[in-house]
Every structure is written in C-alpha cells, then in structure tokens.
Length: 153
Image 1 (cartoon, rainbow, N blue to C red):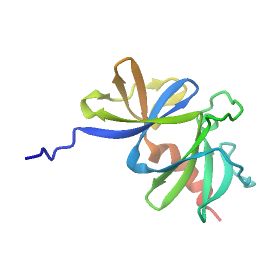
Image 2 (cartoon, one colour):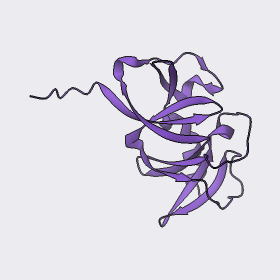
Image 3 (cartoon, helix red, strand yellow):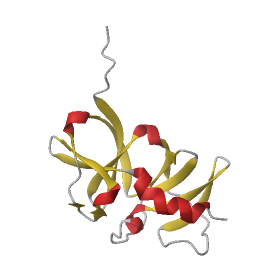
Image 4 (cartoon, helix red, strand yellow):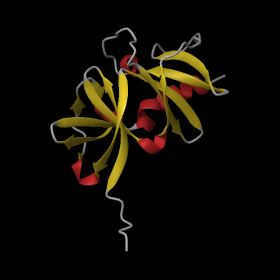
C-alpha cells in the first residue's frame, strides 16, 4: 500500500545573480532558449516585451530587473521559463535553468525578512539541501503587479 501523503515537491531550480531559486514544476509550462521579443510601449522596465510562443502571445519579464539586480548581457545559458498561473502565462528571463529536484517539505523553512536582493514578500520559503540554499519564489506575488500591467488593453 502506498502512502498518499505528499511529503516532497518537485521544483525547477534556476540561477539569478549566482543564487539559486526554485518554482514548483507544476507552474512551469516549458523552458525556452532566449529569443527575440517585441517591446510593448508604456510598460514597466522589467516587462521586456512579448513573444509569440506556439501561437500564444506571452509577456516576458526580466527577473533581474524585477528584483532590481545588476543587469548583464544574455548568454547561451540564459533561459525563459514559461510559467502559468490561473489563466495567465508569462515568460521569466533567468540566467540559467537546468535542474529539476525533489525537495522534502521538511527541508523548507519560512522565509527570512530579507533574502539577498529579493524582497521577502516574493519568497515562499528557503530550502537547505546539502550545501545548496534554494530560495523558493511565490510566483503569485512576483507577478501580481505584472499581471495588472500586461493585462490592460
């Protein structure tokens, strides 16, 4: 008989400014290589534009800009994580995304007040796995302002 209690969560781990962040794999539609996007006038600086991804116009958010981190040029390892919340899809530009891991729920601690350059409001928790520290993002809060800015027409 299998245990029906879920005691772990599968996370996509990505890098931003030499730190590791995670979002739940069930919120991720795909991970794409960086590609050209169309700028949208009048949006916040972190809204880089939109792309047409398999027939769906998807807004693109640069997480470095969103979190007020130092900007750097896109490289071969730069990725766009296509995330989905309710009926809203968005692309998140990250430095690299190449890891899917299972995190035990008892390895996740509540977020500290300040986590590096990211406001504590955006952080759901912090996971300590071996020598790694993974900051788990609360996507609803990261994207809450973006949703209003992009969904206006």
